[in-house]
Length: 416
Image: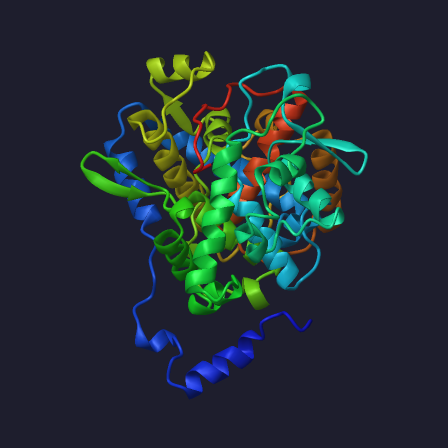
């Protein structure tokens, strides 16, 4: 541990000795109410519906593919751009990354004119373009992941941020000024309320994922991802939740990523997962909404259509998670299913799998099946986070391969 890192265990002992600790026994378990909001939205939606058959079928497809790929928190760290260290530098990188993790889609269908970052001999677009830009800045000795830097208006200027986000094309990263504001506001809140150190937010949450999400939403304006739907306030908290999930994945549930209630985190309501759920036959759109999306027309942030898309996708992933748990994880004789064990009862067929997996994934899954066909495997932990991560990776691969069946909806906002 370096001198500038926070020793969470020492802080815990000190605060408890002073009577200021936040023990679990002294308060009710935290709830984000995101899932409750999603259920309410789904129950009252008019233009977005879920297919019970499609959802059950998708659960089988997703389970088989995740099993074949041995998908877990380790998969997150395996990407070349995600942090590999398990220290405070990784925490600050993830904080910065998720403060800026929104709105990467381009108005221009020509990929050669879209925002792209040149890094390590490759061009990175979308979310990966953001992550690549942060790495590039750090290598140029620009302390972009340091909260104190965000408050220094002499050193952290618009020109510096433009340099950090310089593109290999003529396109600028969308919502540039909003990204600058997110960093400035976060730096100010951390300085005024949390001693300038995000580790204090993690400590105050006392290993509760839900408490940390609520803390972020209550104190940082850019994390207050809420809307009004049918006379009721509903919560999504996409970026707050994915920040917690990224910490959990990076640290593999330990140290800064240790959360006793991680399964309270829902999927992250954005524009990619609804697209994938539609492709899997889970989510159905009314003709007007379907036409609007296919024509690449924008949908206003916090409009009824957008709220229904986001809320229904959260609830759909929850139904998929419940189905996987019921069918594969809670059965006494459940085995880790091989990709050739498709049955009508499972509702999973070869053509469904081939539609959603790459050649490499199919070969990997088949190889794994050959190695384990006669042996029982341990039952893995599956939650909404891992399902979301997996579906995001899958839909990006489908996009790269030109196999998207419907475009994603287009909403320009800082929320996702």
